[in-house]
Image (cartoon, rainbow, N blue to C red; front, top):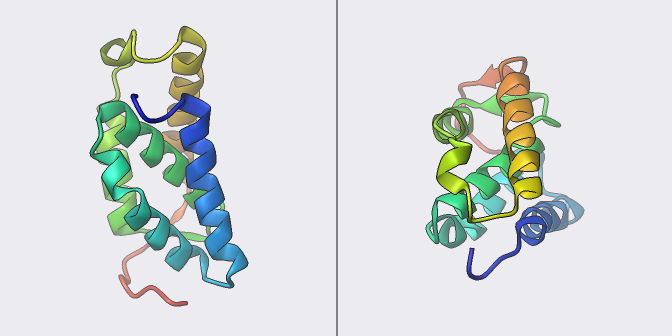
Length: 122
């Protein structure tokens, strides 16, 4: 993670999302814009992709419904998460925290109502 510290990236994603919510955008639209804003960061590497996806997964947990497209893309990446592949890229403490966060997201996403309507309302 050349351009980001572990917590810094989580904070940046969350700050971006909250800024959109403060502009009176819906949860769904704020999430969509945040996803778009961090698309380049996600392409910087697997760790960045996992952190952004985890942060977005945590945001979704506050929604009443989860759009099937977000659910599938986040689950697809996080299910393949292997902490051994990230060893040495971040500290042991951060790796433990990330693993816990990912497990919480994966478990909690299964409990959310799925939205099959791709229309995002502002």
